[in-house]
Amino acid sequence: MDARPIRSSRLELVSLGPDVLDRLLDRRREEVEAVLGAEIPEEWPDEHDSRFLRRRLDQMRGDPESQPWLVRALVLDETGRMVGHAGFHGPPGTNGPGLPDAVEVGYTVFDRFRGSGYATEAVRALVAWARERQVGTIVASVAPGNEPSLAIVRKLGFVQTGEQWDEEDGLELVFRLDGAAST
Image (cartoon, rainbow, N blue to C red; front, side):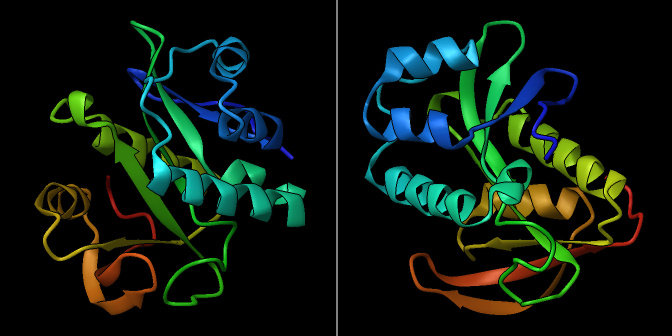
Protein backbone atom coordinates (compact mmCIF):
# COMPACT_ATOMS: atom_id res chain seq x y z
CA MET A 1 0.00 0.00 0.00
CA ASP A 2 1.40 3.38 -1.04
CA ALA A 3 -0.23 6.14 1.00
CA ARG A 4 2.54 8.69 0.47
CA PRO A 5 1.43 12.31 0.15
CA ILE A 6 0.39 13.58 -3.26
CA ARG A 7 2.00 16.92 -4.11
CA SER A 8 0.70 19.81 -6.17
CA SER A 9 2.14 23.28 -6.61
CA ARG A 10 0.79 24.63 -3.29
CA LEU A 11 -0.67 21.62 -1.51
CA GLU A 12 0.34 18.37 0.04
CA LEU A 13 -2.50 15.83 0.04
CA VAL A 14 -1.78 13.75 3.14
CA SER A 15 -3.51 10.41 3.62
CA LEU A 16 -5.59 10.22 6.81
CA GLY A 17 -5.07 6.64 7.94
CA PRO A 18 -7.00 4.73 10.60
CA ASP A 19 -4.74 5.85 13.46
CA VAL A 20 -5.21 9.52 12.52
CA LEU A 21 -8.97 9.15 12.00
CA ASP A 22 -9.36 7.42 15.38
CA ARG A 23 -7.56 10.29 17.10
CA LEU A 24 -9.46 12.91 15.15
CA LEU A 25 -12.85 11.37 15.95
CA ASP A 26 -11.80 11.13 19.63
CA ARG A 27 -11.06 14.90 19.51
CA ARG A 28 -7.35 14.37 20.17
CA ARG A 29 -6.51 17.34 17.94
CA GLU A 30 -3.00 18.01 19.23
CA GLU A 31 -1.97 14.42 18.49
CA VAL A 32 -3.41 14.64 14.98
CA GLU A 33 -1.66 17.93 14.32
CA ALA A 34 1.64 16.41 15.50
CA VAL A 35 1.24 13.36 13.24
CA LEU A 36 0.19 15.42 10.21
CA GLY A 37 2.55 18.28 10.83
CA ALA A 38 -0.37 20.58 10.07
CA GLU A 39 -2.72 22.94 11.87
CA ILE A 40 -6.31 21.69 11.79
CA PRO A 41 -9.24 24.13 12.03
CA GLU A 42 -10.71 24.13 15.53
CA GLU A 43 -14.26 23.56 14.24
CA TRP A 44 -13.34 20.49 12.19
CA PRO A 45 -14.66 17.90 11.95
CA ASP A 46 -18.25 19.01 12.31
CA GLU A 47 -21.09 16.50 12.68
CA HIS A 48 -21.42 15.92 8.92
CA ASP A 49 -17.69 15.34 8.40
CA SER A 50 -17.51 13.13 11.50
CA ARG A 51 -20.06 10.79 9.90
CA PHE A 52 -18.11 10.92 6.63
CA LEU A 53 -14.82 10.16 8.38
CA ARG A 54 -16.36 7.23 10.26
CA ARG A 55 -17.49 5.76 6.91
CA ARG A 56 -13.96 6.12 5.52
CA LEU A 57 -12.49 4.59 8.69
CA ASP A 58 -14.85 1.62 8.34
CA GLN A 59 -13.75 1.24 4.69
CA MET A 60 -10.08 1.19 5.70
CA ARG A 61 -10.70 -1.31 8.46
CA GLY A 62 -12.59 -3.56 6.03
CA ASP A 63 -9.95 -3.16 3.31
CA PRO A 64 -6.64 -1.70 4.52
CA GLU A 65 -5.40 -1.52 0.91
CA SER A 66 -8.07 1.12 0.18
CA GLN A 67 -6.38 3.79 2.34
CA PRO A 68 -4.41 5.52 -0.47
CA TRP A 69 -7.67 6.04 -2.39
CA LEU A 70 -9.60 7.55 0.50
CA VAL A 71 -9.58 10.82 2.45
CA ARG A 72 -6.55 13.11 2.40
CA ALA A 73 -5.92 16.36 4.25
CA LEU A 74 -5.22 19.33 1.97
CA VAL A 75 -2.24 20.98 3.66
CA LEU A 76 -1.11 24.34 2.37
CA ASP A 77 2.67 24.29 1.93
CA GLU A 78 3.32 27.91 2.84
CA THR A 79 1.45 27.89 6.17
CA GLY A 80 1.15 24.24 7.21
CA ARG A 81 -2.60 24.73 7.61
CA MET A 82 -5.19 22.18 6.62
CA VAL A 83 -7.49 23.96 4.17
CA GLY A 84 -9.82 21.06 3.35
CA HIS A 85 -9.89 17.39 2.42
CA ALA A 86 -10.19 15.39 -0.76
CA GLY A 87 -9.91 11.87 -2.08
CA PHE A 88 -11.87 9.17 -3.81
CA HIS A 89 -14.89 7.24 -2.58
CA GLY A 90 -12.70 4.14 -2.71
CA PRO A 91 -10.49 2.17 -5.07
CA PRO A 92 -11.52 1.61 -8.71
CA GLY A 93 -15.05 0.23 -8.89
CA THR A 94 -16.28 2.26 -5.89
CA ASN A 95 -18.40 5.01 -7.43
CA GLY A 96 -22.03 6.13 -7.61
CA PRO A 97 -22.74 4.90 -11.15
CA GLY A 98 -21.13 1.51 -10.40
CA LEU A 99 -18.55 1.67 -13.20
CA PRO A 100 -16.13 -1.24 -12.69
CA ASP A 101 -12.84 0.57 -13.37
CA ALA A 102 -13.73 4.16 -12.39
CA VAL A 103 -13.04 6.16 -9.24
CA GLU A 104 -15.23 8.93 -7.83
CA VAL A 105 -13.53 12.06 -6.57
CA GLY A 106 -14.79 14.14 -3.67
CA TYR A 107 -13.44 17.33 -2.16
CA THR A 108 -14.16 20.01 0.42
CA VAL A 109 -12.36 23.27 1.03
CA PHE A 110 -13.18 24.91 4.36
CA ASP A 111 -15.20 28.14 4.04
CA ARG A 112 -12.45 30.59 4.96
CA PHE A 113 -10.08 29.11 2.35
CA ARG A 114 -12.50 29.03 -0.59
CA GLY A 115 -11.96 31.06 -3.73
CA SER A 116 -8.21 30.43 -3.94
CA GLY A 117 -8.27 27.50 -6.37
CA TYR A 118 -7.38 24.84 -3.80
CA ALA A 119 -10.20 22.48 -4.82
CA THR A 120 -9.26 22.71 -8.49
CA GLU A 121 -5.61 22.10 -7.66
CA ALA A 122 -6.46 19.13 -5.42
CA VAL A 123 -8.72 17.50 -8.03
CA ARG A 124 -6.05 17.94 -10.71
CA ALA A 125 -3.49 16.26 -8.45
CA LEU A 126 -5.87 13.38 -7.63
CA VAL A 127 -6.73 12.85 -11.30
CA ALA A 128 -3.02 12.73 -12.21
CA TRP A 129 -2.37 10.28 -9.35
CA ALA A 130 -5.22 8.03 -10.51
CA ARG A 131 -4.00 8.19 -14.12
CA GLU A 132 -0.55 7.01 -12.93
CA ARG A 133 -2.40 3.96 -11.57
CA GLN A 134 -4.06 3.32 -14.94
CA VAL A 135 -7.54 4.56 -13.98
CA GLY A 136 -9.28 5.66 -17.17
CA THR A 137 -12.49 7.18 -15.82
CA ILE A 138 -12.94 9.67 -13.01
CA VAL A 139 -16.47 10.38 -11.75
CA ALA A 140 -17.68 13.42 -9.82
CA SER A 141 -21.15 13.87 -8.37
CA VAL A 142 -22.29 17.41 -7.57
CA ALA A 143 -25.47 18.86 -6.09
CA PRO A 144 -27.33 20.85 -8.80
CA GLY A 145 -27.16 24.05 -6.75
CA ASN A 146 -23.46 23.84 -5.91
CA GLU A 147 -22.29 26.39 -8.47
CA PRO A 148 -18.64 26.57 -7.33
CA SER A 149 -18.23 22.80 -7.57
CA LEU A 150 -20.05 22.66 -10.90
CA ALA A 151 -17.65 25.29 -12.21
CA ILE A 152 -14.66 23.22 -11.05
CA VAL A 153 -15.70 19.97 -12.72
CA ARG A 154 -16.62 21.74 -15.94
CA LYS A 155 -13.33 23.69 -15.96
CA LEU A 156 -11.44 20.41 -15.57
CA GLY A 157 -13.21 18.82 -18.54
CA PHE A 158 -15.74 16.60 -16.79
CA VAL A 159 -18.91 16.00 -18.85
CA GLN A 160 -22.34 15.49 -17.29
CA THR A 161 -23.60 11.97 -17.99
CA GLY A 162 -26.66 11.70 -15.75
CA GLU A 163 -28.10 12.06 -12.27
CA GLN A 164 -28.18 9.95 -9.13
CA TRP A 165 -29.82 10.00 -5.73
CA ASP A 166 -27.52 10.05 -2.71
CA GLU A 167 -29.06 8.92 0.58
CA GLU A 168 -27.32 11.71 2.51
CA ASP A 169 -27.00 14.51 -0.05
CA GLY A 170 -30.08 14.03 -2.24
CA LEU A 171 -30.06 14.67 -6.00
CA GLU A 172 -26.63 14.84 -7.61
CA LEU A 173 -25.51 15.47 -11.17
CA VAL A 174 -23.01 12.85 -12.35
CA PHE A 175 -19.96 13.90 -14.35
CA ARG A 176 -17.23 11.84 -16.03
CA LEU A 177 -13.71 12.53 -17.15
CA ASP A 178 -12.61 9.78 -19.51
CA GLY A 179 -9.26 8.74 -20.91
CA ALA A 180 -6.37 11.14 -20.89
CA ALA A 181 -8.61 14.22 -20.95
CA SER A 182 -6.71 17.36 -20.04
CA THR A 183 -7.11 18.83 -16.56
